[in-house]
Image (cartoon, rainbow, N blue to C red; front, top):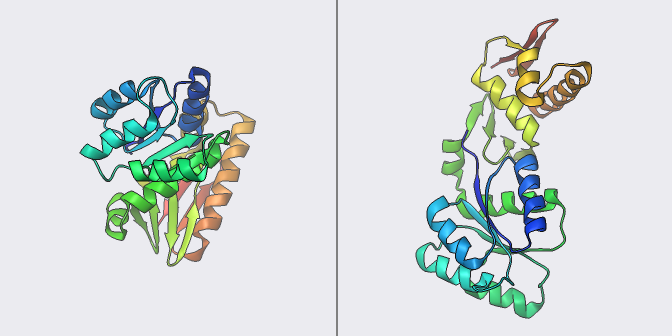
Length: 229
């Protein structure tokens, strides 16, 4: 699965370091960091991101100027301003220059992740695109890019680890997937505590999938798991 490529433009090194690590951990993004507007513009051209998260006040080229330049080349890429400046005038200026949304600093990593996912869905997705990027699991549509399961009109948001496990099971559907293989791949070891963690994630996935009785995550005692469709 290809990761979502995110360009983070932030002149505060400590803050950008924390945000980058959090996004990579909580969201599984491929994050490129630029410290100035000028660096951000060059990174946009070379990195070719799927989404941009930018500060506004930076030395040299401001976030507003940066967005104006990018919009001359690309009108569809989603751009989110992460800033403490959220006065009515700031909002109007940002939207007029081409920003799609704002998030106020300081914020939790999960909050930023939620903003990014919502913005990507709104600006990049159509029903057909979702079908092209997702997998059909019985009556469900599983989309690993957006970490969602859809059953009829219901949508379930998955955690990064839930998505990874379900995708691994799907890739090996009908086959026995050894517990140790899953544990080593995602946790790096197969001790008692990680094994119990896996059980929790499997329980959650079974609950998500309970609307379609034809889908089963079978436990083969003492060996592993098998996804039956």
